[in-house]
Image (cartoon, rainbow, N blue to C red):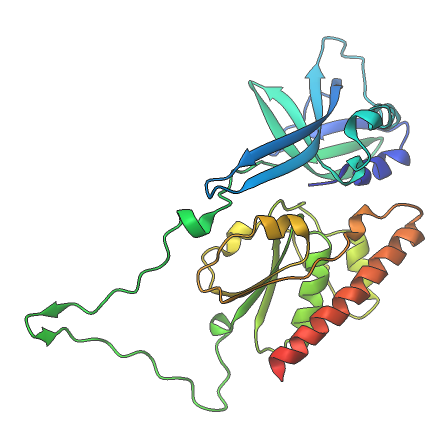
Amino acid sequence: MMTLGELKAVLSGSGDAHVRFRLPSGAPVAAHAHVTEVARVDKRFIDCGGTFRRESWCRLQTWVADDVGHRLTAGRLLGALVKAGPTLDADADGLGVDVEHEDGVVSQYPLLKVAAEPGALVLELGQRHTDCLAKELCVPAPVQAAPITFGRRPAAVVPAPASAPVGVPTPVTELPLVLVLCTGNSCRSHLAEGFLRAASQGRFRVASAGSRPAGYVHPLAIRAMAEVGIDLSGHSSKHLDEFLRERVETVITVCGNADQACPTFPGQVRRLHWPFDDPAHATGTDEEKMAVFRRVRDEIARVFGAYAAGRLA
């Protein structure tokens, strides 16, 4: 999910460009749609495990009128976001953005990214999913079945496969998996995944995911890692649910939000939390933003380099 600060940065350099919306199905919203509300939504709730939680985001409401000649521009939308500043509060630029749109029924869609097209900016909308935040309580742990016996004679038990001979590489699917989590899976978790995989020497697998994936890897994260010889161009933003059936050995969270909503994975034996600043919230010129990405990159390199060295010792 894009943050309000990221959206404003895109709009600020595209004043006269038309703003359009594209639904998750790929269908476009009518080009003359208005943005009729800019709101801050604060959700306070208790999850099924009894933990009190709070989430906040910025919501844009669309409305399609009969004035088909109307076109929303980047400058006009940016003006509305700036004017709404006092209502959204001081931390607004760090809020995720969703769009409320009526298409038969009123639905809310997270804003994934902004695509530039000739004369227009297209706000790409994603799907919202429900989730259980207390899986350790709601999802039964795997049960090891006991051997079936008949009378006094136990049924035959097939022996476990022997360990691989010395010198034979362990199959990739049997290597322990280290999963790095953050909220959007667009910056920090990919930086950590890149460094950790480079240092793993093939002794463990590494992946990353998010609790609310942004749908893209931040271009400045890719650029920052390219500077130190690590290619993130093939990475993608993934939801942590994709790994619930994996044998995850270690979960490492690198931001507060994901740590609060981190599920319990089958086979997990260790959970670590190392928070880092989110470079996606950096403001200023491109070079000033890049300086923040480099700082966070180097901090992550030190922490995850030490972790890898400890595992391989």
